[in-house]
Image 1 (spheres, rainbow, N blue to C red):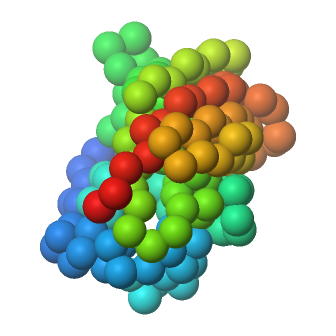
Image 2 (spheres, rainbow, N blue to C red):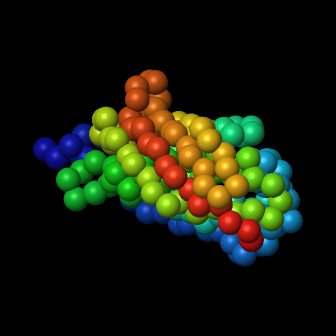
Length: 170
């Protein structure tokens, strides 16, 4: 008997919707990074499409630190039956960049120059909610540095990351 027949049917479909991403991008140019991130958190600024695609969302924002959660599911699986490392990498890249963003004044943007990920545990659809924290360890006017972690719903460390980000005028 197959494993699936032993349990209730699993919904294997997703509909992803989003708002025009250029609205939020235009707003980003008119406010500090902290103000922008607070707007994403409180919903006054539409979330970028990647947030809905990856089932992640910001849950806490302060200067130099952000926290996102993510709910992995089967749609994130790789060919060997576990959540693709790219989901965890994207989650970490997001919190690292957003942590740096909270330190930037109006008129400044950022992009990742490099990211190093250390995967410590696999993630499955039943792992539960992931929590990622990004901390800007060295903000800057030309380059910034950030570190991050991802923990599972039981508090186990899933992955760590460090990143260098380029700062530029927008």
